[in-house]
Amino acid sequence: MVVFIIGNLWSNSFNLSFMDLQIVDYLPEYAIYFDRFNRDWLEEHFEVEAIDKWVLEHPEEAIIAKGGKIFFARYNEKIIGTVAVMYLENGIYELTKMAVDKAYRGIGAGKLLCQFAIDAARRIGADKLILYSQTGLKAAIGIYFKLGFMVIPIDKKYKRADIKMLLEFS
Image (cartoon, one colour):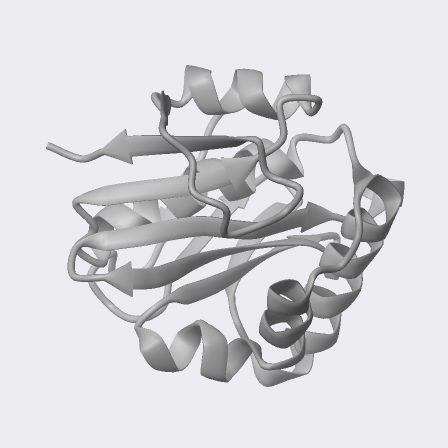
């Protein structure tokens, strides 16, 4: 597997290609996919909480304006997935709102989005990256462990979450 990073890693624009699968920056016209993919995934597995609804309907205000990033997986010129790195406080970001269109699950887009988001968090100055999940999502939890996340005590940011994980950059 060969992964190419295109462009200046220190610019505000990050692009990555893997064959026909690319990771691209947020554009306002992609906001509909951010909402749709995440809402579909949440409704399939859990429910859309008030905090989710606000972030999904206001991604620029909730994530980008506060110093976070939103990325999209594009496959054969079609947007098929998304992930966000949300600023929480100095040096701490949250890996959040990762979802892939159901028709494209299983081609590696989720793993690529996750790895890209981790790399982006490092580049934008994160010391720590946290995420919230649900232990019933065994495949996702397995990926997070493989990527270096460890379990930490959970707070109740999301009703559905029963696990909080941390990746420290040092």
